[in-house]
Image (cartoon, rainbow, N blue to C red):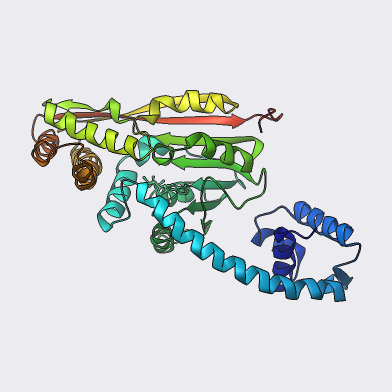
Length: 364
Ligand SMILES: C[S@@+](CC[C@H](N)C(=O)[O-])C[C@H]1O[C@@H](n2cnc3c(N)ncnc32)[C@H](O)[C@@H]1O
């Protein structure tokens, strides 16, 4: 009869004083919250609040529920802490990990190819945008700055990454981002809560990208857009060519596959979005081409983004016996050779933009 969401409603109203503020805090629309309140009052056949001079005052029945909610929500909080630990376990499958080097790499990656990926990452003024899998905020700082009149809620499953993201955003003086610890597969937001969604380099790591898309679609408004950017390691080629370097790249593809991910997901964005009933899907390949004439990309992309990524997963690839140490080291050396005079390097990212249908499909 009484559900957890009702207890959260009561607890939050007691804390913030009004339904409007409580709705914001709970990531619900005010009408959804009012609906929940009416539903609760009708189930209990009693009033929870009196309205006195526009103030909400608890009735006796409401106070009784408030006391119960405090006990129950504390216990739930504890359970959530335990679940977080379970999530830490799930994060063991995330091949890049959460090291200092990976934070630097994510920031180098985002900065180096910001123009290529984000020249069209704009949303209409006043939009509420979910950034799913924000990591250390490397993309957050770019898209939030480029869209100062929109608000972002950026979520990640890693509390360590979120702390770093908060620090980065604080340093850049951006005020339109809120960070929330959450799993893409089970988001704490109401249906249709967001105007738009942005996802970058995340689906490739999930063993259930389809489940993630379903959940993202749930929290997206009808006619809202989903923007997804993913890489595709099969699109990597370079000069001088080297079988060892190709093997090192393939080692990461196989490692990611063993952990349930897909390093070649870029080419699958269209079919994935199509299969999930998104409409107006437009996929644009974004190729990075590097030679000596682009020293910033030689440094920022070949060395600090791509080769740093292969180096970053090498230890795990060795532990999992995907490649020998000799081959991996040789492959990494050869990747670095493409950054020396006369070398070239090509890699293609895929950016998809699609719209949630106005009329829901039978599976939604
Ligand atoms: C390669 S990083 C990309 C981060 C950021 N989007 C960027 O481009 O810099 C992938 C991020 O996805 C997050 N992630 C993986 N699985 C997740 C899940 N189920 N829910 C939320 N975040 C997840 C990881 O914690 C990590 O921070």
